[in-house]
Length: 389
Ligand SMILES: C[S@@+](CC[C@H](N)C(=O)[O-])C[C@H]1O[C@@H](n2cnc3c(N)ncnc32)[C@H](O)[C@@H]1O
Ligand code: SF4
Image 1: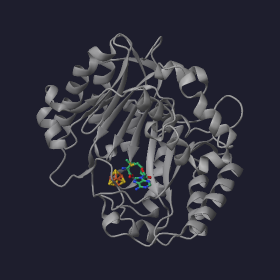
Image 2: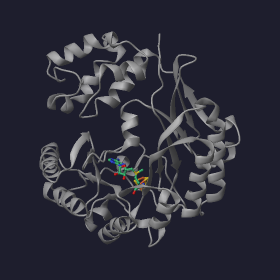
Image 3: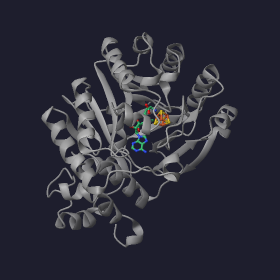
Image 4: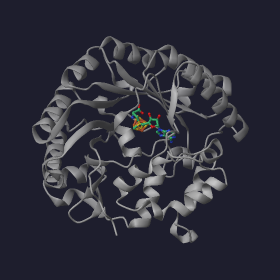
């Protein structure tokens, strides 16, 4: 059914599952580090995890690393240094590869960013969320405006040519003017990249159980309109639903996800996706989610939470859920290379979407403004039960 002739680029995701405090909106695999961090033991577990994955990626080159969480900036620079040295000793790495680390402004002190830089981290992703002290309090952040600005200044001082700021909009009782003020402050700090997310109420979070008052749809629409105009005016080009970059400084690691590349995932709850050209299939697997279970099982197959081999219909949907998030969309060649499937499989459904003006008429295949607004409806066309693709 699949026919893979080449392998897509390969990246590596490393999950660090601890935070100072759990934010009320967050459904990431993150746990309060109340009893201290088992830093040394966890780095050992990560490297053992990687050792056990090596046979599946033999001879392949890693083109980016993303250390996410949780709050990886809670870890010491020595621990991150040992992690990166261990990765380099095990995997062939592209010489100029992007190595990102997520940082929370409440966990950075002078010197820490410089040490991360010296350890080989060359991109930071700083979780600012807002620069408004009142708003930061409402969403339970451990830092205020001052710490957020200080973190960005430290990133500049430590020579991070490329860093990202995470911001959210649609916060409790936020006005469009407040959302715009956050963006303006962020842009004044000159990050190369901005991720601008709409706050969503995720199941299994405190906010889901105790919903705060959120701006209505008209307000959200106004925030988006004002925000997008302001970002464009300041040279931040949107390239994905929530991602904006200056001077082509897009996140290479995330681009690989959106272009349906392969990735290894090590650490508690980490997911991975690998193309197997010998068996002609795509294999997904994920690690045990709870850090304690993961640590206990790290020495063998017991660290695996589950595996799956998506069928062709699932692969089509996964590909489109990612690639249609990109403003540049995708080419027929990318679809065929990364899914191992013929373009003919999706052509009729794409044709219908083009007729409904949800997709642009010519390749690369990408959403129109209407398509972006109704992306979920568009994707639903590819769900097998709908009787289409
Ligand atoms: C793993 S966190 C990043 C780093 C760090 N943990 C922090 O929060 O500072 C990834 C980002 O996802 C965004 N995010 C998390 N939960 C969200 C939600 N419910 N709705 C929208 N964005 C969310 C936040 O902007 C957050 O910075
Ligand atoms: S600091 Fe980041 S990962 Fe941790 S709970 Fe808050 S949003 Fe989630």
